[in-house]
Image (tube, rainbow, N blue to C red; front, top):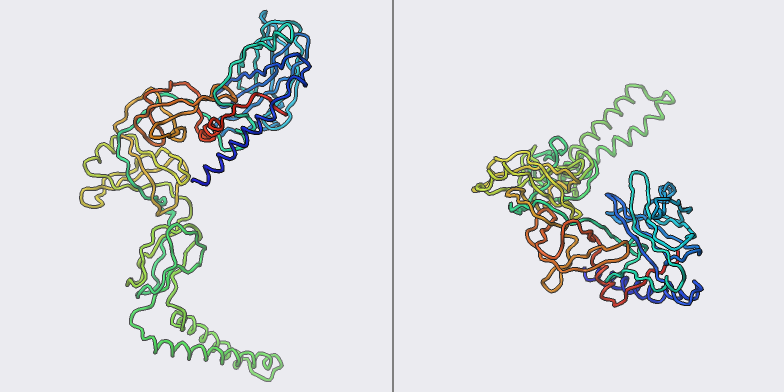
Length: 487
């Protein structure tokens, strides 16, 4: 984790330094006596973010608009093929609309140009399929001097769209939720009925070796255990296997000798069949005694199908009866979780809303209660939940948060949105497409990957749900890059 944080820190410092150096030179490029400020407008729909970046417009002079369109979570650029259908309009105070002409230049980025006919205020609107975004107002100045003095809102931290797209990043909205006071327990992933197959002991005896480990991938026919059959003398069976092996070599030699003779008619068909039968019997004898071959380790117990090894019950040195289940092989991902619940909480679990279960990638998923009531041990009963999202590896353990005792809260965010600093908590608020503000918050209860915010944040505010640490590192670098882009 320290190494990862170091990488992000270095990346953030590099981004800040690069932007600090590369965002100047506006005066030389624009031809105005004063460098014109860059303006950014942002709008969010249910699934998309629209952010447009442009130089403060001057009447009669062409201005280039760079529109960035991103999915929200994960925060990735929209495919350029979809951007081809975008429509961008500027509407004046009388309601007359002018459609910008432009084209996608790469994923997530569309460029258009417009020459304002006069000074004034226009309203910008973007449409893409069912998504319609009112981006805000475009102030057109009468001359370059007025445009240079246009007041443009600034943010505490600036992170370019290109930088956000280049790393794991996500946006979400703080809002009302329900938190639960239910217990947080350890659960065990279980395969769905009929999808797990037992590996059984082929003979009674002592488990001589076991290379099976829970969660490992296995192939059909792979040897998982070796069992030394009971009631056998090592010296006797080794001698018997040696005799059978010698007989097999002799039988194969005899068959190789008589086959060409039978082909030339100098050996009878009966002699050929007798040689073949001798070899068949010798092969069967060797196969029967193979577990006792010196160095074989015993009778193999093999995987009945390819999949993932679940619970392993056999241990080296333990005695097992023939047919005993040694382990289970799962044919797919387990989507059931079994939890030992205290008896005094069983009624609340039955009347509750199921559970939250943490998947292998740290993502919490809702799970419904399938059964609850089988006594597992003194003071506990077993509860079985079916997970709605992606499951885990059969036999593995995971965190389970029981959903009962629910209470509505006004504001909650994903746990991934929280930043911890010296025992206090912060959240990164997205003010615009490239502008962010880090705010201190107070937290309450946690449930299923969500956490209650009791102060510092309001429902409806747009927040960074993934990548907040990188934003904080850019802020710590002490450089807030301007809106200059080299698209």
